[in-house]
Image (cartoon, rainbow, N blue to C red; front, side, top):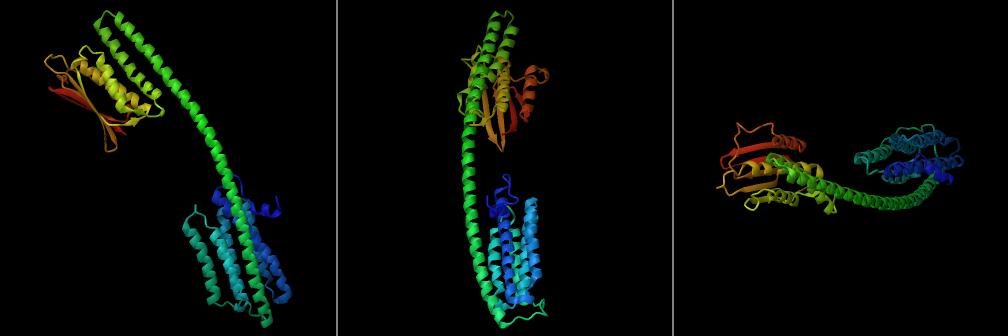
Length: 410
């Protein structure tokens, strides 16, 4: 790496943000050029001799060197302000020291060009406006006010003429050098962006491959969980057929249905490409039919469904499935004891104002609120599962049936 390139990259690290990196490099460039310009300006000693303002050269060298040092120390928020104030004071002094006929005001043009390049899209636009305001104020003051900084210095007409051509020539060369360096810098940043995009694409391929492997593994896990639960369901069925007591058979059926509601979640995930979402419309509809099918009156029970196309993840699907299982099981177990009733169960799932509302009901005989066991397993499960959904539960009961309404965040 060349010496100039090392100067340009002072303070730049791989982890430095893109626009901050550009700002630091531009400041290093303009500081380096300012130092070079000050050194070249020493040739004016041959023209002006003892009237040459040597102090301003030391000032320029000081703040330019300070910028590079602060960049090296990662003190980026100070360097740009030091440059703007430093170059503004320098040009203000030069404008007051030399006669207007020397065209010293021409140096404002490359400075404005530099300030425009220092605009950082990640910073406030007011910062850039402030930079231009400082430069414009410096130019305005130098043209309108006179501070007589060179009261004891006189320039001949010939010296002013030489300085005029000298300043014009210097500004042109300085601007051309700036343009060349900036184009080189832009090309370099273009190459960096291409390298970054190439690395991002390579990382993307690796990530996609990794995700594909994980999806296959997750799908296999879902499949194995489903199979394991199918084994458990089979065991429940065997125990149910062997049970002599009717109450035991009912308890085994209820336990089997709870496992079934969880098993169907994993089956839904296994069959989908998207392993993170479950279609509640298909899942709840299939679950209701499976639960009703095991009831002796399954061929007489009418199921009414009004389920929106809602998708959710497994953390909500499992509690919902268990809630639906408990509600339908309770309806079939208690609601249709009167034979003259044409048994009907309805389920509704709707989006309402950012929430999901689940309603399950029947047209049965209702329940006796005085005698119902508040601490029963079914009700305890429903309340506990609703809490998992961060939802609320509302029961309604009449002689024409009972229903439950559960509201939870979408």
